Image (cartoon, rainbow, N blue to C red):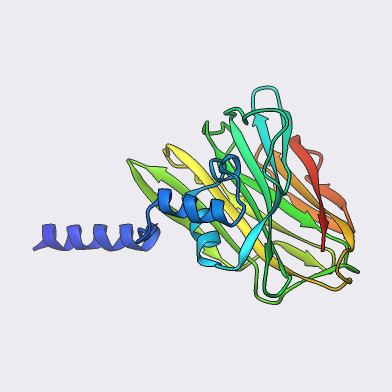
Amino acid sequence: MKKILSVILTLAMAMTLSIPISASDISEKAMDAELRDRGYPQTYLDCISLSSKESLYGKKDVTFAGATVICYDEDTGIFTDYNIPSDGIMPAGQIPVSDLTLVFGISRYSTSGNVLVNYSYDWNDIPICRFQDTLSVSWDEDVFRMIDNSFHRYDMYVAHGQTIVFTDDSGYAQGSPCGVSWYAHLNDNSVDKLYGYGEFLLEPLAPSGTRTVLYGHYVHPTVEVSMSVNIASFGSFSVSSGGQPYDERGNQRTYTI
């Protein structure tokens, strides 16, 4: 009897701590085909997770509006940017595999004109420093406002061949009229892969044809520290880390409403 209770308790704990991703009825190949029809280049699709593809696939009236892929080498602390324009044609070939891939993607709703922003991370080589990385996006508050209750973030990991959702909620660290910041929780157990993303909707406030810039910012602490990122004004990121070391990189995307 004790053995049976022990097994039941173990299974209950496992179910509480680990929530596996439900499988999609649509194959990844079929999702890629439809998303390509909506203007998403295969180069971009190869850089984002299956979960991100499922999110885009489920939003039937979104089309590709541009992306920036950032590659990071943890040993050297070097970031390299690769821009993917709205036509999907990259002038400099394919994006190389790196320790970390960050993707700053922008999609447009054809029906409402709202903008879907997706900022994702994917650790191809599990980092030595696994604490809380911070991701932020900033915009011109005269051009956009974030739609209420549209923010959502996910952190996932792969262990023993199983994909587990580590974080699935709508909470963010800091928000302001011109930006939002959130934490990527990097699971510190024995894992094979770490990835996730945050996404949200922006409502245009300016007339059609207005040209503007959205800024992205990523911070990877190299020691355990309580860190925050403040967006004081449009495109301005202030990192508070108590003087402890960290790697950071900013990037931007120009967008026409």
